[in-house]
Amino acid sequence: MNSIMQLTLLLFLLVGACRADYFFGDLKDWFDKITAPNEYCNREWITLDGLEADLGRNLIGQHIASDVILNAMTGFKNNDNPTKPLVLSFHGSSGTGKSLASQLIVKNIFKKGMDSRFVHFFDSVINFPHASQVETYKSQLQHWIRGNVTNCAHSMFIFDQMDKMHPAIIDGIKPFMDYQYKLDGVSYQKAIFIFLGNAGGEIIRESTLVSWKAGKKREELKLEDVKTALSSVVFDFWSSAFWMSINVVDFFIPFLPLERQHIVQCIMVEMVAMGLQPDHNKVCEMADKIVVYIPDDERRISVSGCKRVASRLRHFMQ
Image (tube, rainbow, N blue to C red; front, side):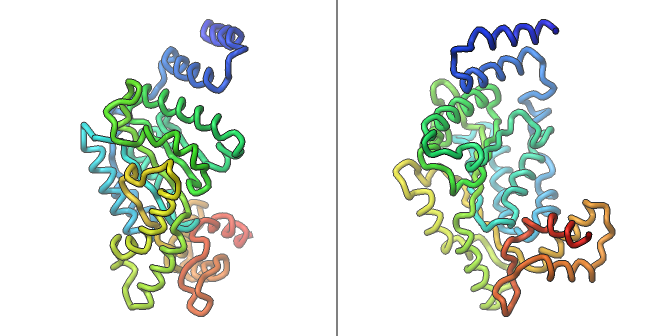
């Protein structure tokens, strides 16, 4: 056993009576430093590059979200002295690309992508499952954010299924996202927080259908066309309790429901990823068989977007 492992084991034994959650965070920070990690918090490892092309190529059917994300990220990363952390809130139905968009952001900022030690992902249902443990989760999360931003000012925190997170947990992290020069001696101004949730999905879907029935092409839709309908739902969602001020969120980003043409694109992309040669006629047949559309008489919008395309495609190909 080498000296580092021996010292690590000794420390574990010495703190056996301490709370493991706090100690683990401290030990991780210490261990990362003394083992000379092959990733550093500098421009060589963290820089915005290639996001526009990646969004255009991979975020299917989301021209509004792509534009807002690109402008938000470019403006923030080009600002050497931001006044607050960047806080993005993604809204839309399941399968519209919210998770993919967050992954593309990570991929084009951090050299190691989602494997970067400066990117932290939380699933509200998995990571904070028990209401009775809310105060513990809150304390642990505060400790985790503080420790990691201290380690790297450019840290990114992604929270999935935001609409299922207990209000008190967000209450605990709100100070990190607000306008503050420093909080307990730590500056959070260069950090990024991204929230993903289904809140507003129904409103966005209805708004898109109304525009389509009025003869407006999807590609002509602008943020303003869905912003009014979304604003009331978003405001209720973020301001429904005393614990959250809507003002900490910099951009509310709608993800439009996907249409049949987008499902076709998703299937073709997935087939290529599986090493298969896409056949357009076959792909169109699959798009009609493996996905449910609404309204029934129009079959315009996919109920589940591209979320289940991969698993259903594999079953279809068997």
